[in-house]
Image 1 (cartoon, each protein chain N blue to C red):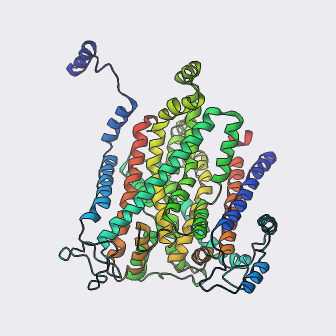
Image 2: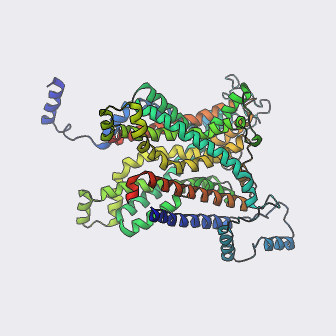
Image 3: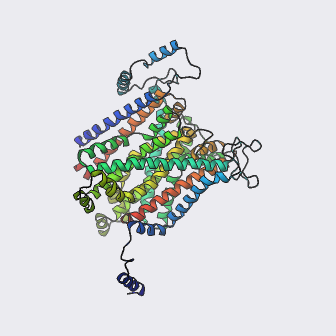
Length: 301
Length: 307
């Protein structure tokens, strides 16, 4: 037996801090920290969030101010247009960051909507079981088969291109996967002792779902949330790319990529910067999601 | 088998009905109608227009008549392309989109499966990590970013391929859009194929096959390929949906006169019937395709067949 192992044993006998054991989260965090790609991605995402929300406040230009002397100028450090200007002379650096605010906000808010609906729906269906479960999941199946991107576009066409509507529409459609995953997990939790104990103590069904089932679902849900955010950002930028998302002068990465794609032959920077910000963010979210999945679900490795 | 098909068909019909109902009522609940122009038309003209399109009848009657029409395959007239019915526009645009989408699907399944298989057979090697990193890139970078880049490199810089247009579906015009459209699907298929192949390679019957001395090539082709392909097969439903949606953007970027382009133009011009018609048409297509995939799955997978 090596000395360190002996020490650990000794500590375990002497004190009680070691004996406490590690929670799932501490364990997962240790595994995640060893995953270099995931940690790097996490750092990049934090930096991305910071500069998107703090950057525009510090920059000398406003996102919708037109600089008539500098129309479609190349990036330069000397005049403060770090990413150059677009075809009507607006500062691309600030526009990229402001676009990032919208994209990230849509990603986070719409995912939160889907999280709320999906968890409530899935946990209820899974816990109650029987006919309620059958009907609730049948509804999910039917909605799942709908061509959802087209329905979102239809919604945009009919009710105007409103940012709040984008949040709600995307959130209301991505909850389906969440509901399925949560239901499956709930089914396996339902038979566990702590739920039986709560039932025996006469805890109401609603409280069992809220206090005992949902907290134990968090692991799966966290993984799924990190993978939903990039999907939602992608949907929003898809809509904005087609001109069906956010409206001028407000912008998002998708809208900027669309403008950039039209100008790319004469001014490459209008495509390059927003596109790399978008791609980098999606990339990092996917890496963090994969890393979390490995960290929280070791049997999958 | 027949009862399985029947059950699946019964599941597909309500989905279709929900789709049509949802789309119809969304359209009617929306503020503003297709005749709300900047210059208002005189009330008499408006009344005539409403009567001509049946907009003056009660909502439930409109719904019943629309449902009846749709079930007979009639999607009504287009509001913007005067003298065209939605059916005619679909008949004009869909063959183009079909050719594009079908080619992308073949490319995605073929290359995705091959890359996934290679990665699985050399699990945890540099090849594996390389393939998976490229796949992650394919998933992360949206195809509307990839497409302009492809144009920039192969059309503008080198001038090897045209930057857009359809030209009756000549292969030169198809290369770039098909690549851009297939790329994310190649990535997804590769990831799925790798996962299922790794599982199969570890299974007992495969060890038996190798133990009795079969060459690796034959082990893979005869024993591993079919079961490993099943998860890919069930991904074909979502893949179709992904390709159809992607094709909407590709047709826009490459100026291809397909159904997706009509759809976006219709959406931007508030051409209600066209948008509604295309949503229902594509919805029905996806539902039908999912049904086919389910059937195929049950033919190939004895476990499902037995149920």
